[in-house]
Image (tube, rainbow, N blue to C red; front, side):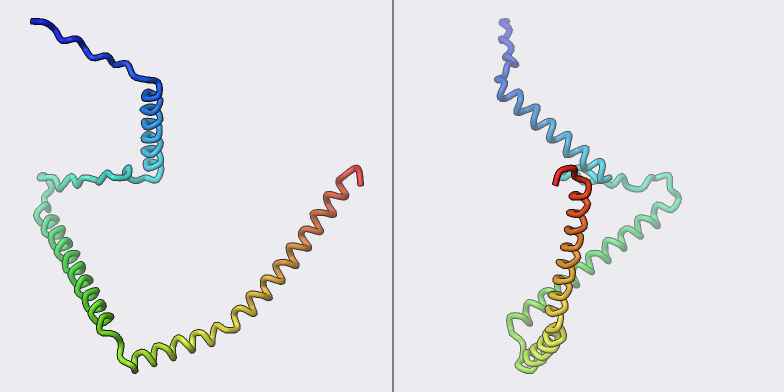
Length: 148
């Protein structure tokens, strides 16, 4: 029987360097994830389960099952609440509710109407401080320089 000729493993330099670059990038991502103390992106931690030698294995399994059931119930409750909110949003609010919310927002706006003036004062003061700091630094530079 005639042996097949082995395929050459030669590759262009472009391909070689591209592979090296991708390997380097992959290793960098793994290192970064390791520093954060987590798993690399896209990997999920596998649950090893509970060893058979544990005397309270059955209790732990029941506890885990109850936690799963509670989580599922919470998810369902959140789903139902979201459905209700969407339903109410589709129907729209009554005129009384709209008026009440408008009053609340108006009161909140009136309370914050003084805030921009205070912010402007703070900005002016910061500008003065920075000007003083600039003048101080300039004086130091001029004093330290040999030629004026």
